[in-house]
Length: 89
Ligand SMILES: [Zn+2]
Image (cartoon, rainbow, N blue to C red; front, side, top):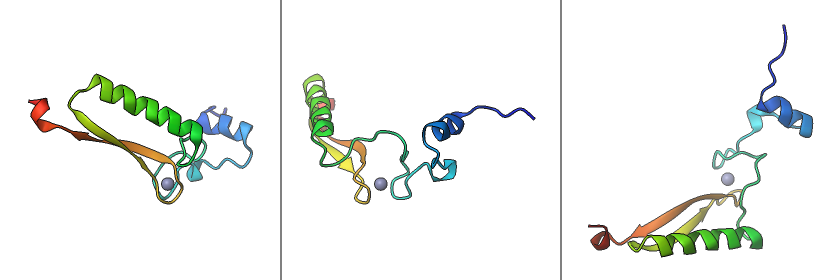
């Protein structure tokens, strides 16, 4: 039978060690093969700062935004915002 060409096929072509079952990290469920923003990376930190600065500028009810990284692999996970509820209403 003809083989469907899926993402795993192309990932494997780029990287022969690619294992589709192994594609997400156990610690935080993120793709191992995607370029993640990493804790301690200066360029990534600048992107994060820019994002947070824009959000704070655009949303006056946002007090602060904390970038959360995975403790295990240092990949960026999410932003957690502190919201001023009085300003929301
Ligand atoms: Zn992780």
